[in-house]
Length: 427
Image (cartoon, rainbow, N blue to C red; front, top):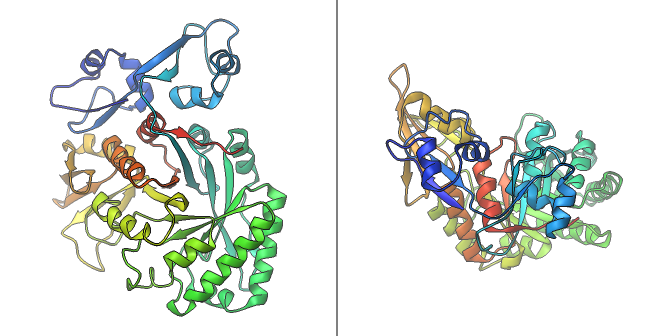
């Protein structure tokens, strides 16, 4: 895999000639909507094949995979232009293997809402170990607020992806309720009812495990939250399920703030089978302009986390989005607009802004002015920033990563990920 950063004067044809590939392959793999309008500073991912198969009449992905002794999912990972198993034609060149040594296995979680575009879902599933569906709600009595998830569970399993059920205290207004968490965490009857409802739902719908995402828990409920997670884990492990708990990005045990205080890293790490560190949202909707997941800030969280939680339990969060910030920042007034990483490059092209790269944050950004003369700063992810985050993942020796979220397809991320790692499949 090669990551090319577009330079002044580059064209899709000159880049293809430079790396001995074809413009068509670059366009298809990177899903370039405007290949004749490259942005200076934009990244282009080039896959370097080791072995290539020319499709013959009667070939299917299954018999090609059998011929070369590899899983079908590998063909889907290395050939993202193939949408469906029978979507190949005679004469087509299919990559069988890449000329790159893999770093080893990686477990990958992708978070999605039930209304995810099914085409986006099926393009993403070859690269996932787990699909986490966001989110089951909880009533004050400990009953579950159902979601339309059965079709998604079936599709995930068809791709060998383990579906994870997620419970949270998120309200219909989109906010985490610490009042709901407080009543649950202080009432054994409500907890017992919730646990039984979770077990029954997971069995009925064939979930693989559970993701617990309780945010902004009151500090006085810290110990009760740990006890609840332990009780849930004990019960679900007895039934053959696994439990993961999502944790706020802390840098010390005594970090102040409602987001952090009730998230006891060592205790929750012990009480859960796995722990996801939500290492994103430094740059956020109501904050000042900065990278969503700056590597220097992420490292501060990881350096603390590994002193409290075994490394083989930890999943590192990775964002799949960016923000368009309006400057100057005014606290309580400013509000950034979220956009996909693909949309960010398209916006840079539209406004004629070159893309820069911040070496400290290890993230791309650009600056432009709107029609009213307001300055904007856009931070997002590209192939370089994803590779940088994966370098950190490998350095710390964690089990996996979790993407928030997979609703908007980012082809370069999956090209980089599948080039560097063998993506674990559990079912």
